[in-house]
Length: 244
Image (cartoon, rainbow, N blue to C red):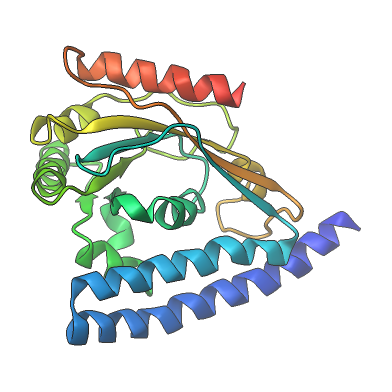
């Protein structure tokens, strides 16, 4: 009976999700071309609010905790574990104050309504995981952007999603590149829980109804005097404590 309910509620949510992407794509295009990037980004925040709280259509609950105050007068590099495609919307919405820009695989930059358009307009680092030189160049560009504009960057150092919930080792290369041109950035870990259980399938269907999702923003790590490897390890250990 629960599996049947998963299929029914997932169908409702994914229709809702698809409509959001199509409708907000058109709104983004108008907002960017008529009013500019800042307005387009406000539209993106609204889209991610709708995506995040739309999960209640499946009986799923969302919990966000920020355990420490974060500065707004310096760049921030958010480091999170990666469990699902749905890790991203809540980060966009709940951390919108810090103007997050993502490190994303380049495959997402075309063909997906709303998402692909925003990746291009938000200055996201679009990396080709088969081309290390290109990936580093893109992340360095984003590093310079957040330094010059006091934005934040979001990176998933595992590289790929862990559907088991067990974190893969954090790669330090992307973190090193982000710090290089934004040496004053604060490193902030985010622990994501429950998304691997909510979305255990590669095709987003069916989702598991009545899941419990949470995002916990942890204490910042000052990068001064630390190597990228040390930062990656410290961030992973902090996240692991939350995941248990």
